Image 1: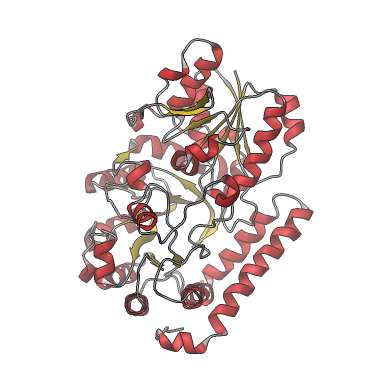
Image 2: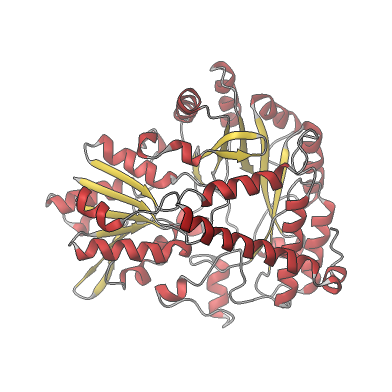
Length: 490
């Protein structure tokens, strides 16, 4: 069958081009089964959807949505497909958590929740007439005016997933400068996380499980990209890189045995590795690590069920500074009921940690999370009831409904101050020979990303980028009283 997979445009400039890993995996699986698969990424290049549909003549259109940002473009391509009688299936994090709202739209026929590889395979069998849709696990659809959701599919063993077929995408378009790398690309080596933070969709989407891909699969992909495209950096997009130290040790061993020369970055937790183990990672090529700290308040840490050793936060970053690994510590402000004093504690920790970058995000209640459900039950939050309302929610970057006890302007100032601090920081990476590297990478990657779609979109997205820059500059400079109130160190 002809299968068209689309990653919709987010409608704004991308500071980094993320390889659509989920679609690549689905496309690789369907292709190895003999299907004719075409993957189109509207974030990279604007597509004439009508011409594409008429020429490729797909038997089904699959659309991936990680958040509400891509809704406008997703509806555009879905409507075009429906006009030609082509069935439309949506998947990804957002439809998985909001399948009813998605299916209420006349241009969406199916929602595949959780992982889509085997569900999409069986959906094709339904279209061929070889299977009943009622028997397809992890599938939602409309029937007689009602929305039906079939039972969940058990999680797959990742050794049964395919090695990525990179011929589905234009690899060069996803390579970018990042922290000293000239051709860095996002890959994945695991799925999920065993933790149960109350603000995170992992509870719903991955059910607090962590599954590791075989290291030999990951090494094979990296080796292929190095040999064919000159890859020199990998950012593992995993929510949590590993849970077993043996997997990290095995990966480092394989890198050395295969004589692979590249740098990589991981996302991990405070207390996961000792100093000696981080030195082992550095020796294998690890040059950056991200830690989700999320709050500087011990009480708020308890409320969000973060479960990390607070006393190990500051020492961990000092150790990594000494080893030479660039560190990123993420924080969230504006939790439901969060007080000014609790936010001051977060700013205090932000001022204290020696992480190279400390991005701050606004709390956004995400469907399926404990804080989302509690906010609705308490009457603090009114959830979106339509795709139009959903499309207006820009998670973490803007404040939709302020659920905290902190003034909205204060939250904006705090976030912008630390983002401006990161952008202008001279030693944003652990290499004194490359000052202001983060600012340079941000500008170059942004220009590269917004130039992909042609001159018209270059100017439109460039204007949006300038607006975001101006917004950050204004809020980080125009309110000295608020900066003083929270004792923000710039």
